[in-house]
Amino acid sequence: MFFLYTLLVEIVQQLLKIVALFSPKIKLFVEGRKTTFSTLQSKLQKSDKTIWFHAASLGEYEQGLPVIEKMKNQFPNHKIVVTFFSPSGYEVRKNNTVADVTIYLPLDTKTNAKKFIDTVNPEIAFFIKYEYWPNYLNELKNRQIKTYLISGIFREKQSFFKWYGGFYRNALKSFNHFFVQNDLSKNLLQKIGFNNVTVSGDTRFDRVVSILERDNSLNFIEEFKNNTTTIVIGSSWPKDEDILVNYINSSNHNTKFIIAPHNIKEEQISNLKSQITKKNVLFSEKENKNLSEFDVFIIDSIGILTKIYSYADIAYVGGGFGNPGVHNILEPATFGVPIIIGPNFSHFAEATALVQQEGCISISNQVELNQAFNLLIQNEDERYEKGHICSTFVQMNKGATEKILKKI
Image (cartoon, rainbow, N blue to C red; front, side, top):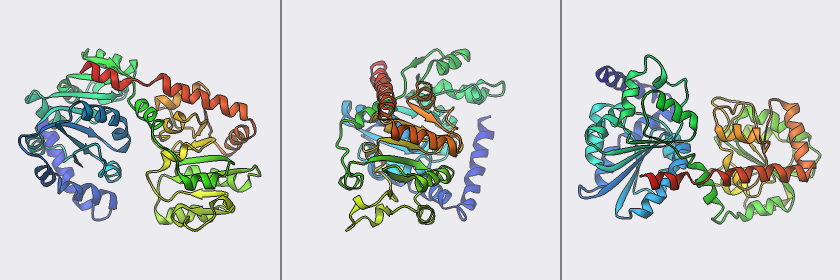
């Protein structure tokens, strides 16, 4: 089975080179991996002690960051190696300061796995949330390198729990311990014979709680807000923006809007800007402007949304009209901000919980969006209560990082 799997991966590897000619994202995926081993060889010595963390993309990196930071503090003489599978994670965090080496993970062939483990020679390896690469896991197991899954989450539909999933179930045997987010994941693993499982919770809560300890001030946002009720729209997609723009254009409340789209390509930003009839300004053109005069601030940049949420009175988090669904709601939640999202959130435990607890409102259409915004704008008590539910929820769920480190 390993032979067939590896053959398939190698075929895919060749096909991706062709696809890369037509897709900028796949080009990054292919080109970025060309320098992985040379980067490792230039930054690591054979005598180095290393700890390896693997994240599929940006969300998983942020999820694992509290553990990465703690391990770095506890083992200052070790080098931290962070690998990404996706360009959307690597390209945003390739210059992070917590890792000594940040690279793309080579595709999961037997040759790549052997060469990678030979070069990095980790004392311990962490996979964050998911991604189970059989050749890498098998190589770690053969070398008796302790391997952990952190903030793992399992669902009944995954192949591990199907009659045909033996190959992937076998890959799970490489893990010394599973730290999972919920009881469902633990029960599923136990049903297929894995009892080395701890329900530690989600390390993202520790990540967002730590945000409160840093300086989140942004002078230009303060100038724009100008003590006015402000709605922050984060990680919006065109399907979100279709109804959001209608509300913005027709709203007669004394309210300001900050929009930080998920995609900041020039064409999409230009299209969004052209649809808004109220006085608006882009982040890229803010210099020498009196920002307090504008009603809508469009953030055509990345990396500052978290700080912007600290200025929100109400947050709308995008992605809920797409697949797999809504983006990260924990960042506005930690600041005690009431949240509105689209209808697709069932794959995200924190969104499901906050909708049930009524700190978060799920909407499915224009009418429901209008009602939700109007309620929270006009009723300050309702706004405060829902925001309090959100911040309390985050505080009550922190502590996963300590549970993981204590067990290890």
